[in-house]
Length: 141
Image 1 (cartoon, rainbow, N blue to C red):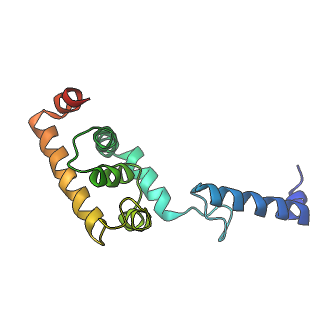
Image 2 (image 1 turned 120 degrees about the horizontal axis):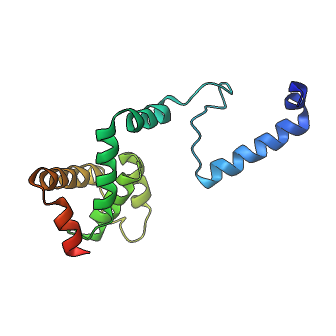
């Protein structure tokens, strides 16, 4: 395919429509298209590299995901916060999402997500260190 095809009005219009659809669906591309086709979004790339390069971080992320899907939480709000955290949703965005949620809007405050995440991260680390993480997951599920 000739590079001239990518310069046509029809192609640019189609490309624009697709990027709008992707954005509306919540898709996050690691390429930063508004700057250059080949320039990469630094934040996304750092997150991906951290998981790929450091196996211990990948293992931690797997433990967080498994813990988030357990029934080891004191309140439903805590479980929802930790599940969002396990999906790599930033804390500020967790707050923003839950602030407009009719179920949790009265319970969520600016630092709630941060405190909940720290609390359950500490519990998870303690269980892993004590060797009780697997038992706890299977005992309750």
